[in-house]
Amino acid sequence: MARKRVIYGIAAAGLVSAIALVLLVVLPQATGDSPGSGGMSLQAVLHASPMLDRLRLFSGDTDLNTSQRLSPADRSTDITGKSGDSAYRYVLNDDRSTEDIVLKPDGEHFAVREVFYPRRTAVLGRHPMLAQKYSATTDLVADETQFRYDGTESEHTETSENGAKHVVGYGADGVKVIHELVVAAHASQWDTPVLQKEMRWRDDASTSLAYSNVYDKAANKRIITDWDENHNPLKVVVPNAYGSNNGTITTAYFPGTSLVRMHSEVESGANIAQYFRMDGTLDHVLEIGQGSTLVRLFDKTGKKRLLEQTWSRETKVVDHKGVTTFTINSILEVDAQGDPLRNIRYWNGDLDFEEYNVTIDGVPYGEVDHNYVKGPTGFTLDNVKYWIGKADHKYDREDDHKPAENLLAPPVPADETRQSVNMLEDPDLLLPDVMYGPEGF
Image 1 (cartoon, rainbow, N blue to C red):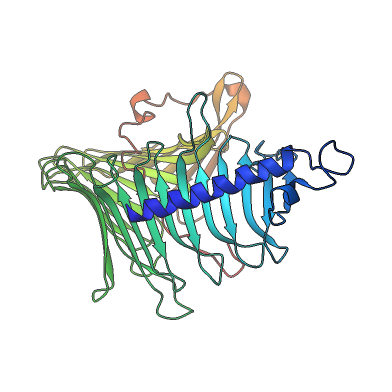
Image 2: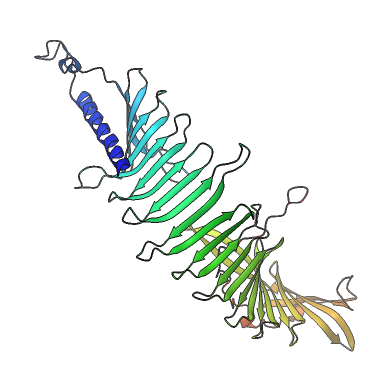
């Protein structure tokens, strides 16, 4: 409460100074030509010390790319001190919010700054939104308090020059602590500050823990946990100790239980995420790469694969939100034992069917590839390549075909081209680290 009184005291002092400024600017100064002035200025009449001001107007120009104003300010007024440098600054912003700023002795850098919510019609007075105190030697905001419009405190932050930070967030009543963040100071100027812990509680009667992020220095391990209302873990993330994605392990649970719903580990080429049924059997696996997602489906025992799909993945920002789309790239069909039977691949607009272990005209082939090209009537056969044994050498036979033959590709089963699982069930799963070669690729 004492901190709020100081803040409101600064606001009141600023308001008095602003009123004095308005009187000096608006009222005409008395001169020898003004009736009844006796040749004295208004400052002389009031026996006031000189109070100089500098008014700055802002153009309101906007950025051509973002359409945002180049400066949020409409205008500002600086009041000079005894040294002739600016001592106070009063700012009116485009959204009708205002700022009161106390400047350091150099007349340029901030010492104290208060921001007030945009004025509302028929509402008297100003409502503090933000109060900041700056370091005496740098532009670091050493102390910051955020307020809601109703005056309750929402967050308070203390920051030190050595990188230490302490943030406390408050509930709707401005008293109940619902968020705490502690950053440890860096050990040396070459080290970076380390997030020691972050805790979030629900802003309700239970004030139950919703999130925790705790670093164990002795084990050099961080554990990040999302909790349900009954303090059951929903998701536990153990990041790589060295800051990269590879090696990060994530385990998610069915709500209200200790049953594992998903377990993933980021490997060098993909994040391998296993999804389980409530009986513990494996339902499907996602292999999430940089620009693709492989889906592997399993039977009810969780041991035999039924189908594999590979999808290209693209995320774009639409209306300030990331929208992810998937396009089917390939389908791997398997036999009753789960062994590869046929691979259907979409490639540069064409369609390929790779069949495995087939016999044609009495000759057993390890692989036969039917390559189709897209034409006006659909996909027509272009050529067929045959391999005896594995396709690890130049094909043993090739048959070419012409579009006039109109040998159309067999239909692809519709259920094999559909998304049978939610590939974004856990959208925050990490991607593998980008691997760079000698030339940066």
